[in-house]
Length: 525
Image (cartoon, rainbow, N blue to C red):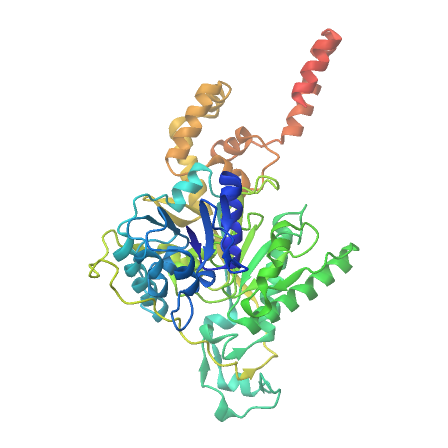
């Protein structure tokens, strides 16, 4: 039994299982009183299908179709959400089965900010560890990036001026505030003395802030890739459902202006809301597979966990994050490599300081929780705040860039490192290996020694390929990228080097037999 808690995860799991097991893997559902997967070896189901997520706790489908100890193996997908609570009946009815929990966030986090979300993370993970025990296999984010199984991650950090200082009552009153639901004017008595950044787009709607952040993001995306321009798959995490609506509308308006200025046809729908309230799962196939529409997904938390969209090149944080587990799950939406489009790196545009959560420590040995899976059930999420009462515009909003970073291994953990520090460290390691440009070139032209140089750099926590992507030098050979960084050599693109070769050796090439000349020119090209 392969168990998950969302239809999209079931679809992904079923496809992956059928790639291996063929017709021996089937989706669990009831048809004419029978279990569709009855004769299959691998049963792929959601908790909802089994009837074990209902408020009355009636696991009717499970009891009707699956006697005790029916399964030899049970795999719980995203078990950081699903280790216990109402769903434990699947595990306890199959005590003889091998029970495997899968998650990208298995450990109990030591969070500097003891918010309600962070405490809930700790309790859920404690239940998880109490039942499944210590992970029997771990593969860390930093190691996976270094090994090339996950896309490298660049971070563009910025701050909004309003977020730095908050918005005061006096500033709001002077700008004719309105009730966000009715549009009617509100009085000073209905407005707080100070709204802080975490309250923006929840208790206080700021259209000018939304528009400015969207303009900055679209500008950054367009400048990051001249070929794709704005047509890069992007997920924007928003504060709440209405905020996702506002961001989608702003991005669509800005995209229409960009198309008009360039004289190019629009690819619509461009930006779309992808939340539970908007039946967001319906648009996921287009986000994943379409090259002519559905480029910007605005969401709250629908796309946080398990949803596999390898084409996503950008993750943007427009919301403030407190939960380390949620943060790592959101980052995970960008880490997939996509061979068809050549995606090896993704960019995080962080406007709210969310990437500080990379620094949260993991406790190696979690505290005792009583063991045996008898701990408390999962904690209910905090209630959704009421519809924001105040909307106000007329603010001057601007962004302050706070630097570029790259996620790199630091003491075995994935951490943001300033790009200048990353380049300096890589340069120092290369010059340690090859003190001069002449020594570097002499070793580089010998393939086995070239491999030794690259291995030495990578084992120190740096990646020449990541540097090439960060510097947007994909048209250059790694020799030019590294020689430019460490020795100040003026880099030449591969095409420029080929042209220089033909020019410098034109006489020699002309003297060769025609077939030999054509073969050498073809190799150079």
